[in-house]
Length: 387
Ligand SMILES: Cc1cc2nc3c(=O)[nH]c(=O)nc-3n(C[C@H](O)[C@H](O)[C@H](O)COP(=O)(O)OP(=O)(O)OC[C@H]3O[C@@H](n4cnc5c(N)ncnc54)[C@H](O)[C@@H]3O)c2cc1C
Image (cartoon, rainbow, N blue to C red; front, side, top):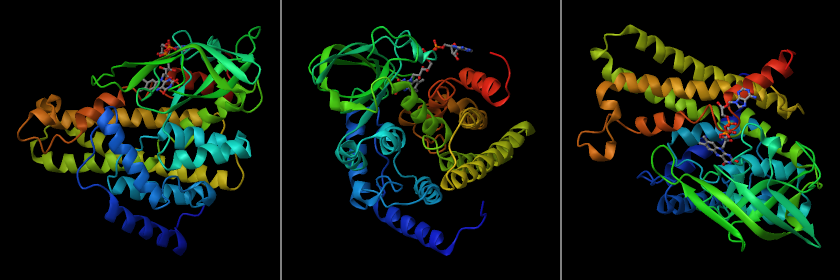
C-alpha cells in the first residue's frame, strides 16, 4: 500500500474538485424519498453523466472513465467534500453495476450499464421477502419458465425507492423442486410490467422510502436473467460483498460527517459540561479516519487481484456502528434542540440534517444484512467457530 498520492492522482483530485465546484446545485435537493426529490436527483445524475462522472470506475464505453479504485476513493472524497447530492441510483451503480461487469453477457453490459450511469434507468433491489430477510435462502417467489419467458409470482418487501424506480433486480426460485440456496436465479424486471404492483411503505421519517412489490404472473424474457439458471445465490453473494465491503458506503461519507461533528462541537464547546462528549467526538473522528485507511488497503489489495471475502462483514459492522455513534453524539451536543425539525424552527441553522441522519442511522445495523448476521459470519468464517 502506497501512503502518498501520485502526481497523477493529485491532478485527478483537482479536476474532480473544479468540476464539482461548477456543477453542484447551490441549494440542497429535496429528499430522494419523495417523487419530486427523486426526479431532482435523477436530473443531477444526468448532469454527472454529462461530465462522464456517473461511475468513474467503469470503462469509457459504458459512460465511465476507466479509473481504478484508488481514484474512485479520491472522487468520493471530493464528492462529499463538495456536499454534492446523495446518489439516488446507488442500488444500480454501486451494487448491480459491478455485478453485471462480472457476470453479465456483453449484450447485458451494453444494454444496462450506460443507461444506469446516465440516470436514465433507476434500479431497486428486490431480495427480501416477508418470510426471507436474514434467512434469504428461504425465498419463495418463483419464476417459472414458459418458452422464452419467465412467469413470475410472489412478493418482495423493503425494496428501497422501488416506488419511483424503473427496474428491480431480484432473486427468484426457478427450480420449484429446489430448497434453500439451490435453484435460485438472478432476474431483472421492469417495474411497469403488467402483473407487477408496487405499494409504498413509509420509513421512520414518514416518507415512502420503501415499497413492497407484488408479482402476479408477470412475464419477462429469459434474456433478463443474469448468469446461469440456478446460479442466483452465488451471484447475489458477490453483490453483497460489494455492498458490505466497499462500494455502498465509501469512507468519505463518514469522514465528512465526522468533520461536521467537530464543527458542531466547536460551536458548542463553551456550553459543554460533560467531558465524555469531547472523548466521543475525538473517537468518532479517529474511527472515520481509520475506516478510510482500511478501505484504501482493501482497494490496493483488489487492484492487485485480491477478492472481497467474509471480512466485508467486519466493515459493515464498523461503518454502521460508527454512523450511529456520530449521530448520537451530535444529538447529545444539540441537547433539547436535537428533536426540532429544521423546517419548523426559525433559528434552525445549527440543527442541520442531524435529526434526519440520526433516524437513518438506526437502519444501518439492519440493511445490507443485519449486524447479528455479520457477527455469525465473522464467528464461523473468520474465527472458525462452530455454528
Ligand atoms: C433502510 C433499509 C433499506 C432496505 N433496503 C432493501 C432493499 O432495497 N432491498 C431488499 O431486498 N431489502 C432491503 N432491506 C431489507 C433488509 O435486507 C432486511 O430488513 C434484513 O435483511 C433483515 O431481514 P428482516 O427485516 O426480515 O428481519 P429478520 O430476518 O426477521 O430479523 C429480525 C431480527 O432477528 C435477528 N436474526 C435473524 N436471524 C438470526 C440469526 N441466525 N442469528 C442471530 N440473529 C438473527 C436479526 O439480526 C434481527 O435483529 C432494507 C432494510 C432497511 C432497514
